[in-house]
Length: 100
Picture 1 (cartoon, helix red, strand yellow):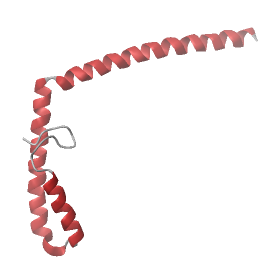
Picture 2 (cartoon, one colour):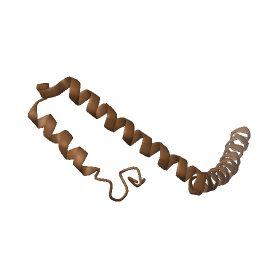
Picture 3 (cartoon, rainbow, N blue to C red):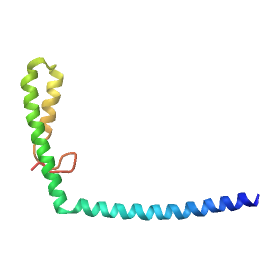
Picture 4 (cartoon, one colour):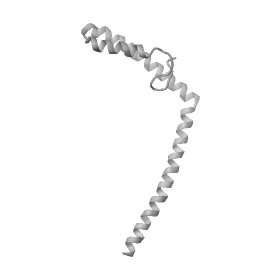
């Protein structure tokens, strides 16, 4: 019985110390990630990548539209038109980047 109590006490102490160390490391990683995300170079690179993605998507849209033509049901075509009108270049998009 004594060994069980010592074992359970050891588990409890290990758990408490482990969670404290784990939380400190988590907070350290979180601070580092926030610093990287707020770095102007990283933000500019992300903005450029988002802009290029929008350009590629626009090109792909036109290629697919030319190939598909009128074979798309009208309900789908209306949905696509409404989505294209949604990203009109003003303000941030769903990813937090501006459409500049």
